[in-house]
Length: 294
Image (cartoon, rainbow, N blue to C red):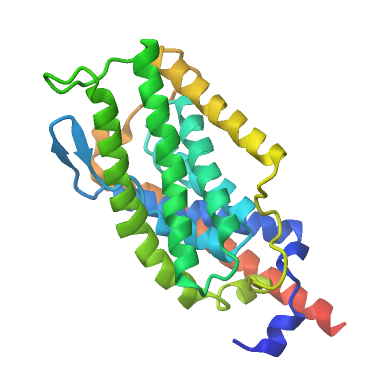
């Protein structure tokens, strides 16, 4: 990386509104493409437990490790909603907000912990933390649904408390598959390799471990309170969905009607948005260079 050039770029905390929007949309688009891929990956079922790739966690983890963690975290979960749920005709309404809040919170906290993306252990830890927060909150909400009585549980014969066992097993498999195999390992490698190569293309300086990270999560009472509020909010939305309270549901299910080939519609839409981001990034970088010359 050209050190002189990187010093002339604006610091991450000095990002313009256009650059924040680019990070948001880029994160949304890349994670949307990743989720389209997971739609065709095989799933296995062992009794009542499903073994599958929930999502390719390394994609959003790399984004929150390299760019502003707040805007990257807010954009990534929206990619699944836009390019998979809405375009594929499988949008469950308020239930989608639950998953959005959980994953966005996990990614935001994880990205805030990465000071130097070149340190692989920091990025790997961030991936595990992101999946732990997302799936941990989701598991607790699932248990609450059963205890409150709005959803039936799948029990193992002879184990009356097996709901806890099943949720614990599901959490462990998700952590190993999505958090480690498709999260920590590829994210640690990619973040180190991409560091300093993508940010200048968008007119930004790479993250500097010696400078304060912009918009990072802080271990303050206010942030912890906000996290608890969001967790309770996602739980309430999940309980409402389980109680058949439907709002904003749109489920024509195009995949069942037209088959897996319909996924190419989502791919085309995501690539179109990605192309727009590339053009916008080049324009912003050109304008930034012009301003530095002046």
